[in-house]
Length: 600
Ligand code: GCU
Image 1 (tube, rainbow, N blue to C red):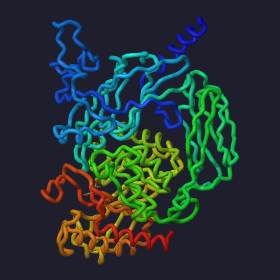
Image 2: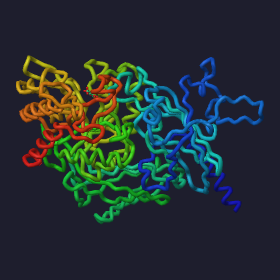
Image 3: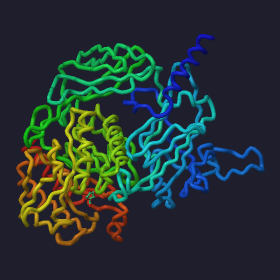
Image 4: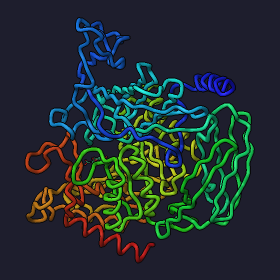
């Protein structure tokens, strides 16, 4: 008994050293978790009076204390337990009409009991919180997180108690000029704890993170690493892929990292056969299971090669808007519906715009054999000169890669969308490209750029960014913002770079059920006609290796206010937010089925 108490005390000491934010726990699926989803008590706090005093100084007795009056004369001006509640995961905007346009702070409180056990560490994991989160447990600050679309976790081993725990999160979705994204976006700024929240248990020393993928360009050499977290750093690590007869052992170094390198005869992941292997990573004190696909993705000249063979990316863009109910999508069902529609369109690729989508989306793409373009929200005109903005973008980039680096479906990391030419922007983005390549040397790097006219009929892609990308992404709206649909018939495309092009956006708005002749904007006929001319133009671009029309489904945007047509929806979807397919959907579907026959 005494030994146990000693070990427990020792353990608390060790874990105290690990309090607060730790490296993202790579895979939560294979671990014992406790979901904290459900109703959370909330306080809407537009003036942040739960955080600042009247002198706008942080208040040491803020709402994170979850204070209760001890006597009838005590003055406490808030009470979580008699306040409204909001569902987590979920944005607050679609849960209450009062909060539909709300941008500001909301305090969330979740009470829970937890049976502590010796040698077990505990973490609280957030799938995402839009935009800025201050996190507290039992009145103690765990830390904060900036960025609305990537996960983060904190260790709470030495703060959690058996009963009466209160986890409090202040979520603030106020837009800021120096933030990522910045003030102006064409999507709804859904606020809140928008993805799952859970407790994760681990052993004292556990497998914190790992990277197990094929070396770029190889079809049998698996390279990567396994990183331990805890006191017992020097351990033997065994990577097992039973189905492929793999059981390889590696030793960790002084930092608890083992470099993984072995060859194996693996069935490669592809859209036709999205093979996922059961992979186990064992250390002497821990074991993690995952489902991993192995494929190589590279470019050669203007070709994109999947597993060494040229491929055409038949894609579509998707926003993380929930089908049918609207609001921020977060569930496996949402992912299955959206990716199911993409499959129906004939897609083998999706561009998840303009921020990392939830993990269900990526894992479902892995299972369905849909390749993914994943992007950080460096969108339009970011504060390029601001070092804090760069650090923020780098952090979101590393969290995006940390979560999805073992997903075969993810083939492209995108650093930016429609950013204006300047030296400051170029050095900002070059910094991100370099960082992405160090974090993940196995995938392709891209960005959605703009083009320009060298003469009335010739478009040129010569954005200086192209120099540093593996794949060129280009957005164009010929026929919508740029002329009428038949303008596409007369256009020629040129590029400065011998690299593959993905037309990362094109399209136009149509309200489902709104009919008229093909020259009438907002009608299905106009959109259908636009797509016909687009496809004819796309077929004439010799270095085109992928297309991703904007967009699969209508999505909410505060910039779209045309009554009875937009009503705060961007109507460029091929499908309405109620799942109704517009005429253009079938034009695109036919193009993709032809492509499937001619360019598998
Ligand atoms: C832009 C942008 C999208 C936007 C779209 C549109 O190109 O990248 O985020 O929604 O065009 O105007 O509909």
